Length: 203
Image 1 (cartoon, one colour):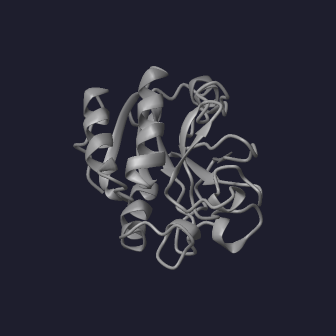
Image 2 (cartoon, one colour):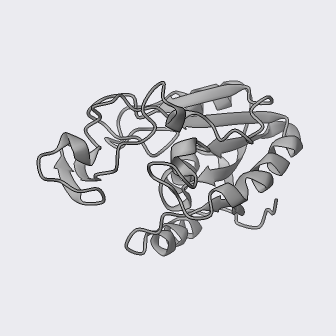
Image 3 (tube, rainbow, N blue to C red):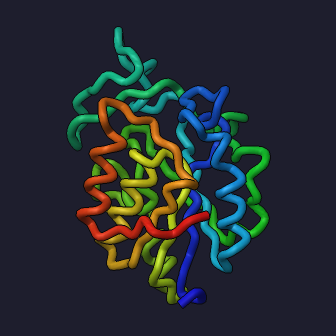
């Protein structure tokens, strides 16, 4: 079974860690756990938020808007964020202590200026796909283990989409951290359980 499993490390980037533009509380503390997981898996994929400077999901792109407000996009409600993970900036780089050497693929997301992208599999319009599911299936990988940032956004959306794509999915809770915006941690944890995602793996 191990040969059919891939580890998906979600958005372990400077801007999501303490001191970053959109810091997730406790993000730095999970780096050792994430690195332990990386050593255990043969197949490792990293995801990387990769926004153009004027991305529509940035509050700065909207007149009189503030971070964490909601705006109506063509595809539905969208949270507006502080500018973060801008292409080519230090904030978009992976955490300096993250072991990136074993990564076989890096999936960049959020680079379309008008569409945000939480999931590693499809963007927030729920139509635009990243191609990750095809890559994994072409390699015969059927089980995915997810960790990284943030539990209640990019990890959860990726995990649920992976289940909908037919993968067996686990999330390693001790190797994640949450933003917890208006109860989002509890809500997304419930949704992941309902989707049949396994929380029993430890780092």
